[in-house]
Image 1 (tube, rainbow, N blue to C red):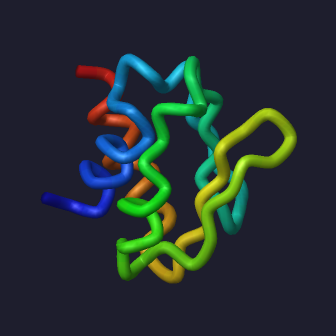
Image 2: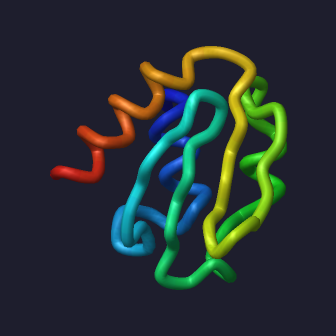
Length: 79
């Protein structure tokens, strides 16, 4: 499973993602139900530097591959 697929599963799957954006350092999810996040699974991913709920979003900072992961997540969410 790719990092993007693992992240998507851990945030509750595509049905739980209302929107996804990014900044230069973080993926920014607006989730239908933030309680569905599997924080332990997110924390276990090697590429994740930090993940937290902030400003009504679930934000994930990656150590590497932010743009590629965002692009893959976007494609997964379009399916």
